[in-house]
Length: 117
Length: 111
Image 1: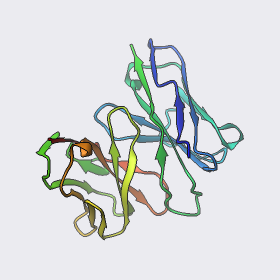
Image 2: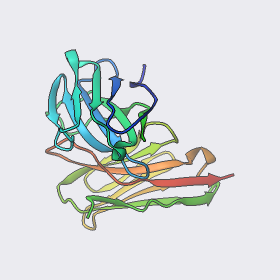
Image 3: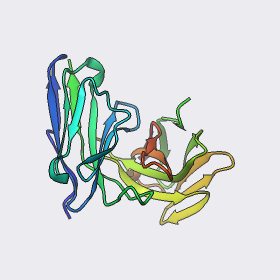
Image 4: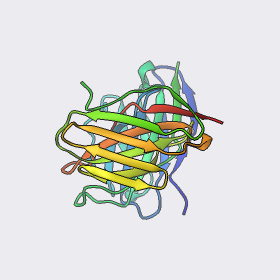
């Protein structure tokens, strides 16, 4: 079974530029998550989708971050404009689960390492 | 105060040692507790999860949760160099599905 795919793996941009990350979840997984992992920290949830609807985006900085999940499959996360403090690894995860069941295992992709200079 | 606290280490042990990794948490609503392993430049992978208090064993790994003291532990027996990674504890409420992670502990097992 193929895992969660993410691209690009690495990205270097200057502050105030924009950047987009792409995620393809495991086939059949209804729930998709984007996390931000700053060096030396655990992952922090940015947004959670159930199919193509948003379940939780309470920690997404909506003035600069946006995300969408078209047709309930692939997802993109965009940052515009980027700040120095956005330097982090952006992880995508997916799970079978739905909001009616408390916990399903989340499978993580390899992440996109973003450096903002 | 962060909801899940974890000593970031680093922790270095000889091969064959018993490793103890620990976290504390402050949110009484947490009901599910997980341990993830993250190799360098990879995404986290789930090692074990437990519901509420108690122990769970899987091979060389044992997870313990003590809800009365809000303490989460992972024990690794007969540690191997391949166990060298960052170990992340995480917790989840039953009513929302947001995982809250600790900072992670970097473990090195020396041959």
